[in-house]
Length: 526
Ligand code: GDP
Image 1: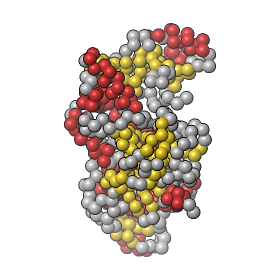
Image 2: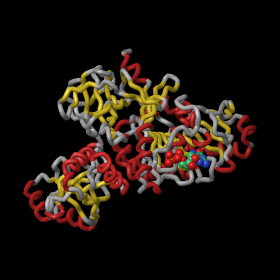
Image 3: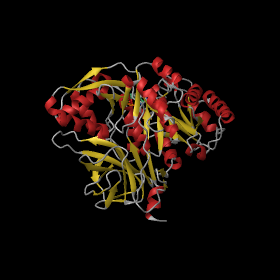
Image 4: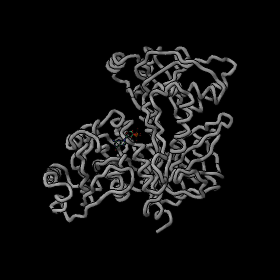
């Protein structure tokens, strides 16, 4: 076996996603404890930006610092090399999360047993579905009162639009929670509230074993048997292939805070989760085993120190071996580049690395060469397909308040858009610049960063806008006629593509019915 395939087989690169407060940070921390990457609980800082902090600049800066430190967390577990990619919890940064999902091979979804499937989870799952990303679901907070686990399963199935198969099953919930029966390993784990890693495991032969009755009492043991019978009747056998195709999600129950059910989750995860998979480039499908290095930028993180306008480009290695100081081709510019100080993130420490393998993330210090979605190769012409931009949901005119700094403003805006903070459109009628985001917070971040990193001051002017959508047509005359009729509402994006800015749902629907030859797209990939 070649060195690359050997390294590849043991890599597990994934993200944990959840609605804020479901327990993502807690679960991440517990996984790191098992991986020996940290030794005390409380070492992982949540990078979520609390609602109350929306106008607290320093808080945002602090949080951004935390999120660079916890962007990628790698650790060894048994023979496996596990890479967790962190995603911001705050929904205003959902776009960041979407892009991170392009760099993972699988996902763990955390759901709060009392709240069930929440909005953010639903949206993130849509992105997973678009890419057929395999998902494992962890139902958390079983130590608290919550919903009936069968109800939760139904909701997971209908809300996330995926088949589910429980691989563990809780015995009661809340104050009466006694533990979980691990269907995957056929064992019984008894719950004792604790923050350590010890779980009391009762060795049993099978579900009819009397030791279950001794451990949890006859009544609960009978209920467990009845539940398991029902599960076997209702849910299909767990089929790893279906999971790998993104069609079936195994479900675990536990309590991250009590480190309960976490090890079982991790053990199952490393066994069934995929190692890096082939990646589609425009030109061809690239296999990770290939000798030649290739990778793409999925995230750019600006330096917090305004005096050094440098950033870190996060590259996912897709094929071959990445080597320090080797010459690689930056596809968009055609330039050859060498990286003397690529970093990787192991056990929460940033280290310079000499090599990296498919599934790994390397951080490349950069001074403005990289854009989200850029491909690096060892010479071959390849362009990895990124995730499309989605129609933004909030819009404001951006106004320069210091005419002497318009150059700085242009440069800053360009850089921020390259980082993928927001999308920029130019209205064709009045030439005004419009920034579109997925959340209010981005406007504040942009204004702050333009001032502090580029010395450009701007103000926002509100505009009432419902949606921006990309338009095209096979009939160029029809397109021209549409643009003429709607000239006040036409804009172009940074690639010069036509964008229709509808100020209400009604206007959009009217346009769609009045102009049947025009196609309206809600994501930039069409
Ligand atoms: P995130 O926003 O998804 O990262 O959520 P956190 O990990 O920060 O958790 C949100 C809150 O839920 C925190 O107060 C945690 O202590 C708490 N929490 C997490 N897991 C559990 C659990 O298993 N049981 C209970 N009772 N609380 C939990």
